[in-house]
Length: 111
Length: 115
Image (cartoon, rainbow over all chains, first blue to last red; front, top):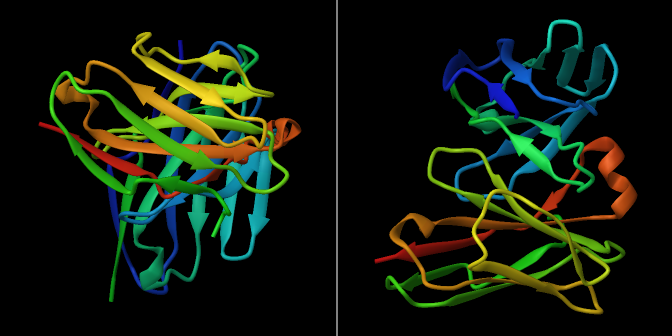
């Protein structure tokens, strides 16, 4: 089976840095993805880690440690528009190209 | 904007009815997946279609069925609706090889309410 655990809520101040953690259990592993979803909107792809280490894309970075079954999303220079839900997801190795999502972390950015 | 469009955006049905949701995939994408997202939860995989055939299925009963058409658009059909089927239904498209990066392109979903 598969399971992903994330904190349910995080609050941070505008301009600050926030880290959203994700631990996973899966029978097979291709990589860890991160998605952002604003209220009423579509999930949008942020990043993907297949190998250990840090991937940086602008203000967002994502980290993976396969030995620890752990990853995180790092958001820097927080802006009010970053208030959204963030989901980590793993690919299913059963052959279908689908994702298994965590329950999500609701980030609230305050002034 | 992902180029994935879904219709209708909102609909209300009663228990026992049937519903059809529609999705147009992004240009050049030949794979469509459907996800169910309950309030406050992450999306859950329903099934995937590739070249008009079901190519994988999540833990959903047979009353959830789908189709993919030659132009790669897709339908999700749910029969004998139950109250627990109330959710946001998301369509996601990808090129089949795009799965290597775990990147899916989602539509904004169809919000189904079952009364």
